Every structure is written in C-alpha cells, then in structure tokens.
Image (tube, rainbow, N blue to C red; front, top):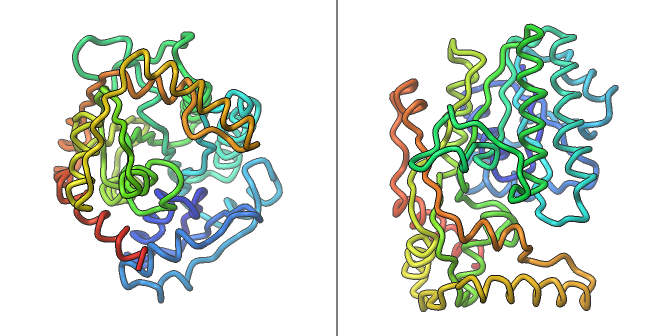
Length: 334
C-alpha cells in the first residue's frame, strides 16, 4: 500500500488518479478542513469517478504523530506531496511548521517503519538559480540569501530532512517540478493563471521560467516510485519560456485580448505596494506580494535531461497542455 500526503491538491489528486488507474491501493492523508472537490473533479474529468470511491482517506495533519504512525505502519511506500505554498511574510512560522517540521515527521516515521521508498515533491524554488549563468540542473546548489523567499528556504530545509533520512538508511527520491499547469482550484496556485487571463488580465511579467504539465508530474512520480533508483534528485520541466508567451497562448485559446502591459521595475514596485494596501483595507491576503513580483522579473532556465534519459520520457508540448486545460476551464464554467 502507498501512503500519500497532499492528495486534495493539484499534484496529489493527479498522482492519486494515476495510482488508482494502475490498481494500486492508496491511503491518503487529508486535513479535517480540506475539501475533496479538486480531487473528485480530477477523477470526474478522466471518467474515473468509480476509482475515486476506492481511495481510503485518513483525517490528520503532518504534525499529528499518532495518525502518521497509524498510516505509515500500514504501507510500503510514501509519497509526500503536502506543503504550504505561501509568499506572505506573516506565514513564515507556518511554513516552518508544515514544510520543515512536517517533512521531518514523515521521514522519521518512514525510517521507524522501514518504508521501502519515500518520494518527496519539492520545487524548482530550492535549486541554485544564482549558481549558474546558463541552465539550472540537479547539480546547482541552493544558496540562502536575502533574495530567496521564505517558501523557497522552507522547501530547501525540508529537502535537508529528506537527505538526512537517506543517510539514516531510507531510500528517497526528490523531484523538483517547475511551474505546474493543470486543472486544480482555478482561483488558487498556478491554476489561477487560466482564471486571471479569462477574466481580462492586462499585465504580464517580463521574466522567463520553466513550465510543466501536471500530467507529466504525476506520471513521472509514479514511474520513479517503483523504479530501481534511489537517493537521487530529478528536475521535472517541460519547457523554458516567457510568461508572456504562456499568457498569450492562453488568451488566444480563450479568444480573449492578450495581456499587453509589460511590467517594468517601476510598475513592479508600485504594484505589490498597492496590492498590499488593498489587502489591508479588505482584510484579505494580497494576490501579489513583493516576493512573487520579484520572481516574475527573473529569467531562469531548467534542464530536465536527467529524468528524460532515466525514463526515456517525452514531456507534453506546451500548446497541447494549454489547449487541454483551457477547454477544461471552459467546461467547468458550464
């Protein structure tokens, strides 16, 4: 049996789908406050709702040691996909509690119950983008600096818990996906790109980064889990391109006007400050923070050559990905 954390989110729900389609038994952790709607929708979109009802769910969180022990003791493999993704300064302590301490708990209990392999889903945010002038690969070391977000640092420190566990005898794999495109909650995370452009987004950041289809992430995670490879890291990235190019592809598919205002350094500084002020007035978290504004200005390129060669894998073309998820977005709108 496989124990999965983060099954109610974008990546976790697609991993659950792949495992269920292969007839694997899965025990999935969910917080008491978490909705199963995203996961249910994913299974419905793939005409697999009958498989959704076969999933065993356990309520708990990453710091509930008795629940984690109860779940992991029943399993042979662990996929740790749960994480807090936040770029808000006020969430710094929660990032430590969930991403670092929670990962440490998963690793410790996996060691105690002699799990065969534990796969951790990290992020390109932990890779050394400042340690190369060309392309980032698995050998680029992360350097903590004042330009790195609290989220990046928390995921990097979580990775250290994974490597520590490998030194203590646990077989591990770390995957680092780039910006994941897929049909999750359309108003949260990277899925919000589709929602924003459909609703008339006018601005685009000048930066470049990597993008990957959530289907590719789920497929590769499942393959690596059962492959005889251990204690390795793999970047999951389908394409390196500009935000402008991706935004334009989405706008064209929706037959909407393309975002046409390029964010300059001046607009960036004004934008996140206005959004912060708006959030204070409305008592809501800002959609744009200083950290997210900064990330949109950077140009980064990521190499997926290692996983492509290891699995003989071909990533989906970006235009195919965008066409598919724009169609799903429109379908969900009814």
